[in-house]
Image 1 (cartoon, rainbow, N blue to C red):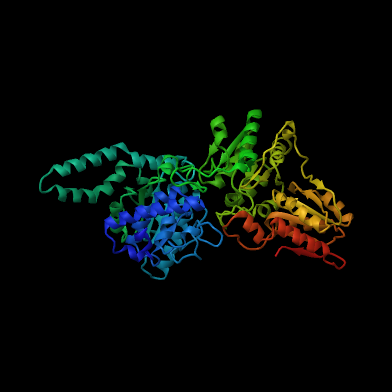
Image 2 (cartoon, rainbow, N blue to C red):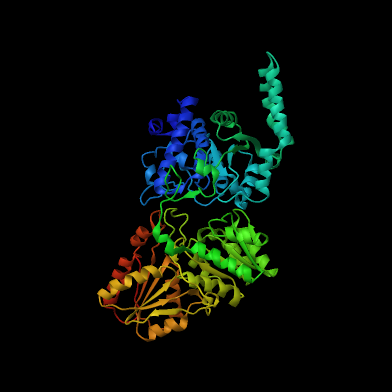
Length: 640
């Protein structure tokens, strides 16, 4: 790692010869594998972008030139080349480097990124600001091929072609986003890569030129000059040309010489241009090359064998994603109308088995959440029962479609919201902490959250059998105890009805979702203080169980609400609204949830403790609240 550790900034690349740059690429790959094997993180995409990052920083002058990376799945090499080698072992650890792009982290991270398909839009803005201020620096957007399935990327391309300004777009094409790419754009790019006529023509021309003595090299140079124009006739790159964006490529993304040459030759053009770079996801690490999907996001592993350490506790537990996989396959077996939709997250949402068993009823629309939601509405009105499986954080991107195309028309689409709550190492861009707030204000929407495997089965059966309205079921990235499920798993839950889990006195804890596990761990600690609360599993955030809430108030309970969600507009806020609407004689209310700030990356348990939602913090805060003397009338205490 001697050479890598000598790189303190991109300027240190300028004096290295090609051989040294090749050695640097090897060291970067080796270091990424070493660190990610210990911390977990995005591996395969980053291994594929090593030479690309080196070439960009060799040719351009960051941060004066603005290099804008999309998402960040391919940005670990960029971090290592911009002064973060020593801190890299802290990536995705609490207080350490982000796994994505973050402006607060480095001047070289000129635009934050976590969700895909934003880089070209941001780059257009940077380029226009440069032109308005009559500056001269370069602006580049680096975007993965999978991100081109998102409409936002094409909106930006359309605008960029119209503006006719100096803007470089580097299309880093590994033929995958997270799951394999789908759709017409993916097929289009594959035709460029594999265009038989062009590739055969180029090979034969090169061979012919090499055989011409004396003038062969000069003729080949002339041929290369008109190659790009001729290529637009021979391969489908003409699409970008027709949009007003010059197309160059495809370029071998692991040939440093070719990359540096193409960037040098095109950097001073004053027109929008796309440099199409072909990379291999997982390059240089055999397990990741063989299975790039598995190694997109890796947990800790042995870097020699590629195997994850054994976890004996996992045998008695099942992830909520796996539970969803089981229940949707069961629903599809029983009801031929059930279809599943995902937005480029087949594996992450647990739909692999469904796709294999019911291929004609499975739709991967690419990174296009807005389209997924509205398409689900069409499927439902056409007689099907669509389940749209989209992470909580990604569903934010389709808010208008949920409102306008689903709820306004009261269409019975089922939203399976994985990764709700704190997701841990992926950080602020991926925390699923806002979905209750942005969904519960929509008329007609039903919101549910299970607390175990059985309840999750029952909620999906509820949505399918009992509701003719839109339903959203939120569940976390984590796992739950395995249960022996019998016929009860198919029994719907009465919509809007909570369940009392424990009868107590003086204080009632009303819990929404899987944070119930932390509340249950807090109960023995409260018992040591002589406090035995009533515990309620709310199950529904909308409609909420008004009758039960009012009965608790009438019995003189002080209420505590607990949710793994922001307090602003969350479940606890809804409880307060109900009490106000019913003009209830309110005893004091304590709301426990996530404070009004973005939550950074780290282990979930440590984050829960930081925001006051660990079992110990819940017990301490409930005990203090229970003993606090309160004046008459309503008094509201809430999270820090």
